[in-house]
Image 1 (cartoon, rainbow, N blue to C red):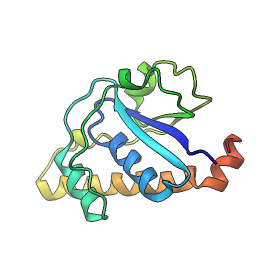
Image 2 (spheres, rainbow, N blue to C red; image 1 turned 180 degrees about the vertical axis):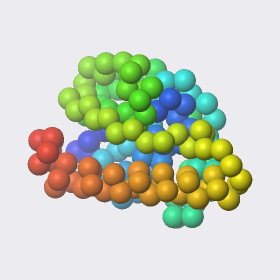
Image 3 (cartoon, rainbow, N blue to C red; image 1 turned 45 degrees about the vertical axis):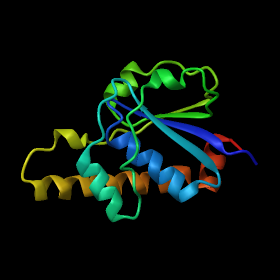
Image 4 (spheres, rainbow, N blue to C red; image 1 turned 90 degrees about the vertical axis):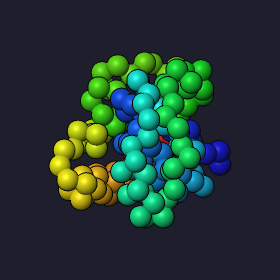
Length: 147
């Protein structure tokens, strides 16, 4: 069976889409190949890098990418993880599955370093659980009919 190609999109490809890509590749890399991109790419959020490392995933060498890099790629599934990306997401001709699941933007969290890290851990865990619930291969194939 060929891995399904999944693209996660958020506004800046600095946090949410990066975490989703990393979790899908880490948890289900034998069934999917995940990518991530941003509508308006920025720089990787250092708190996200830190909290991902805490769960054994190093994304420190990742770079924010533009969705333009993926427009001609033959994708199976496109996932927007923020409302702004959903509103501005272009059409990907090869993708037969479009999913939206909004998560809080870690860049919008204000407070002490400890507070910000605590909130970003919660977002990280929410994304991980959503990836498990949505992309568990038997469940995904049953729901979306992709093999």
